[in-house]
Image 1: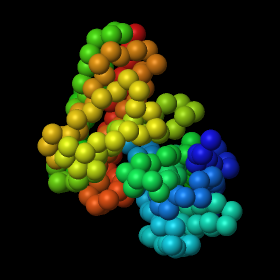
Image 2: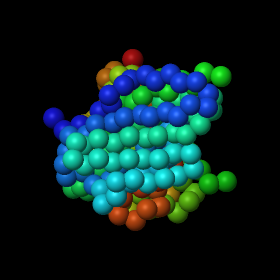
Image 3: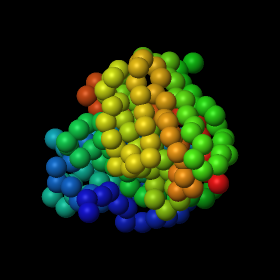
Length: 113
Length: 114
């Protein structure tokens, strides 16, 4: 079926390194993608989003890359800090309704001091 | 303080006993949504609402009802809860017109159905 998934369920990095979290999607009609961060015991928190008419968008220490050819989305975190340790989810809007979102399984990012 | 609130935060109930989880936001957001989160399954959307009196199904709407009679509130109703509805539930809201956008999530409601 059509779904959003992740290549790696866990990622461990050293403080100060750059992190890359990947996400694959299968629905070519999807035109809006969002990354969320969820810390233990809390609700998800919006990080950054990107529309399908873009291939790159930058925020504060984060960059999202969208490769529509291979249906791949990535989140890059620069100079990763211990506070970045969390579960990261990508979410996909399938284009039929902008209100309907499908989330990936999540990647656990652990940052070691 | 801008926030999404959910009540109750924790609930243990028995099969078949109707319950309502309330969700309220004070940001005048048009869009609101309910999700459930289960280990290994991530977040799954139950229902969403683009505006007052406008609701639609997400990926897992079976066994749930919602209503959006006013902008700030979006209650989730379980008419006859079953054990497979034991989960962590999140409500979220967004100002973005026409879609989910930058959603603000509530703190979650942990529901156990025995």
